[in-house]
Length: 508
Image (cartoon, one colour):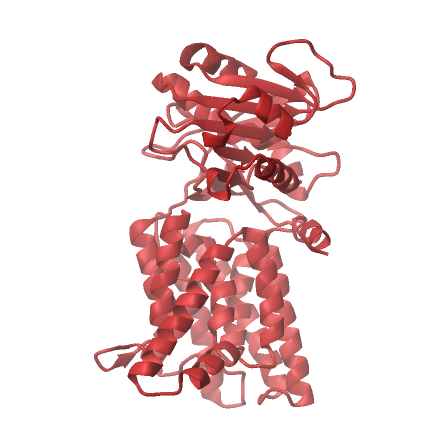
């Protein structure tokens, strides 16, 4: 069952999955309103959704034209669908329509006007309803938080969290919010059981955590900071939390969390110009860009790359790619694998010529080398999952930084191996122990550095005498990562010794 789910969600982007989930929630809400399970008219929900979708589309296009930046259909559509589910549905009163239009305008404006180096700071839907509450005095009701809608919010939300691997952050937020709410009930002499039940079944807890807390642009880059972010928003989430005479709301809690995220983990976007495309294996290319001035990153981190193109398919115009270059290099490089029947995005990439422009943002990732240079490491890569290790090995070589590192790199044939020159240089200059595993049936090669077959527990045990004391970095397809993790577990390697990279350019 889970394999089938993973197979489906792997075919679409996080943004497109979020659109599908929010669209489904709106349709389900209309149905429940029609049969009387919600205290709203189905026509009110329909009018609200149409008004917000059209308004967000038009206003976003205007701002994109003024600021001369590419647009993403999922971005404004996600905001419109979120607003539909948290603003009271249209009831026929003129002020209702004013509220909808004001929220749409403020949400889209916040993306462009409240930003840092091109990236918005606050969740657009949250900041919009917070501002309308201060100005016109019309507040979000978060009507999605009902017992009728709860099962569907949970199902859709869990799909999104499974797709983006943010389960830890969401869990920390939910536990913190429930514990904090119970604590506030104790102080106010209110029934903890009743409050606990209401928070779970009739509040914005799960919708906020699954849909809005996880927004990549307004949440921190690394796990540790994301945990602090989740704790902060969780503490502020309950309406029982009070600062002087002011009680917080879900949107205010999220906005304060967004501000914390910006201060500890600022993001920005830039527009790199393509210099060259270089073939690194029969089905993979390096895309080489001039690195922008003062751009800093750590070996192993990734970014989101936007490429506007015509006839965009369901996978959209955004992808995550690990940076293959080292911070010591003047160029910025991403390695990309291509397939026979690729997406419209990949086809557009192949058609690019020199001086073509991308948009890059959301520099993120914990898949970086430890600060302790004495820590013993094992890098395990499959296919184009080698890109973060190319960055790390090049960095070590250029810095002449000697670390105790094993690299086990799996590919079908010798011709499929990329960046061999970089790894052989690392072997000679800094003593990296590099081995290549060839999995093709007709790719037998005799060499002390060639493994004829797959990387498994036997190979790891034979090559690495002190395998139990090392930290493992695994990069490749999700199935490959899971298989290697199981092999390591059979050797007695603990989960805290293993790091994963799921954003290695495997999107078709």
